[in-house]
Length: 157
Image (cartoon, rainbow, N blue to C red):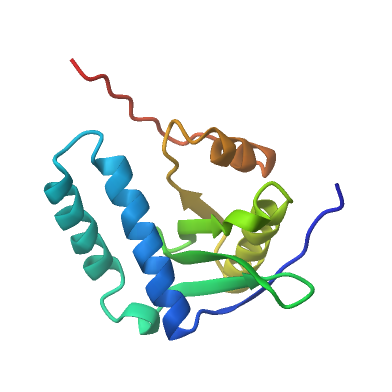
C-alpha cells in the first residue's frame, strides 16, 4: 500500500460539533463498561468542559480536520498540552479516521502530520491513551514507534 498523505486544517464549527459528539459518544461507550451510563455521560461532559472550555477557540489546542490529496475530509484529530503539565510534551486527545477511509493508511498519515505539527510547536514528545481492547489503534501506535509508558489493568469481580 502506498503511504497516504494528509493536510491538516482547523476544524469548522460544524466539524467541531460532529467531532465532539462522536468523541463523547465513544467515551461514554467505553466508560459505561465500568460505571453507570449516566455517570459516564456526566464524566465525559466534565472532561470536555475542563479541557476545551472555549471549544474550538481553546488556546493551545489543535482541533484538526485531515484532508487527503483530493481535498476530501478523511478524519480528524485533537492535540494539545500534556495534561500532566510536562511543558516539552503534547497530548493526542483524539484521533479518528472516518469510516469509509479506514484501513487505507490514513490513521498513520494523520498521526504523522500531528507529530510534525507538535514538533513545529517546539514539543519533543507526544503522549496518548488507548483503550486496551482497541487492537487496531494499538497496532497503529506500535508501528509508529510508540511505547507503553504505563499500564492500568482491571478485572470485574
